[in-house]
Image (cartoon, rainbow, N blue to C red; front, side, top):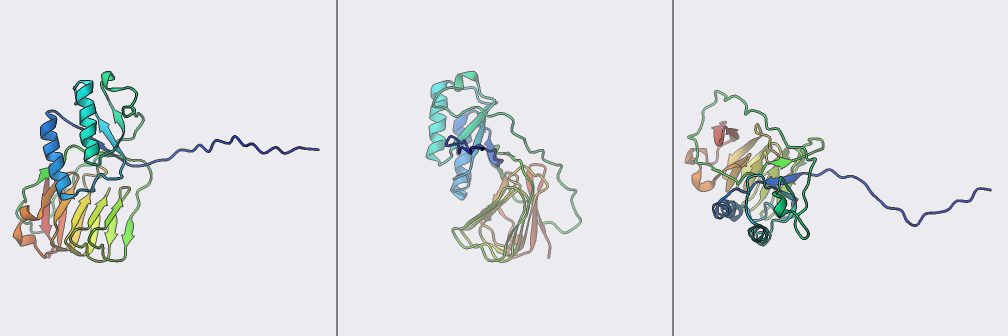
Length: 246
């Protein structure tokens, strides 16, 4: 006779892949926070509820200043899940743990410029260095309805295609490219996973902000010639290039 004994001490352990943004602070930190605050003023919830890793390879500050730095990030609703390349003095109890083994993205060279007519180059600004680390398969997220004001749509593992408009106050965040078959009045972020040849396509450009790979332009900085036009936005070196498609 065989006896079957049910264990009550089972540990449900499994692995889980995720995408995390990597922020690399640089000194002087006051200047770095000015750039970060400018970014957050345009997209307050961009880092909210997202895993953040700090790359501390360029930061050489004492422990007290580091604790203050983490506090300032927390007040901006940026929660740090771990750090890379820290000074040994910045590792210890009640501090973010050191993480290893991540797979960094390898941005590809930007695609060659086409022959379509181009709008005048807008003045663009750069986000504090925030490449993402990712694992898993790329996939496209399809949205078959308009994105309403206040909504945030994200797919950090691939592209996003939207059949409809993106309203003012709405936000779309993609690891790859973003295609909008409608008017864009909100904020579009493409290439946040480090894909340098990511692009933004929209049928009618009236955006509050367009961003590819960390370089962005706001409505105030866009060439008036692009308003209401069908456009393509891509990264050329460190600046944005906007082409009018019709």
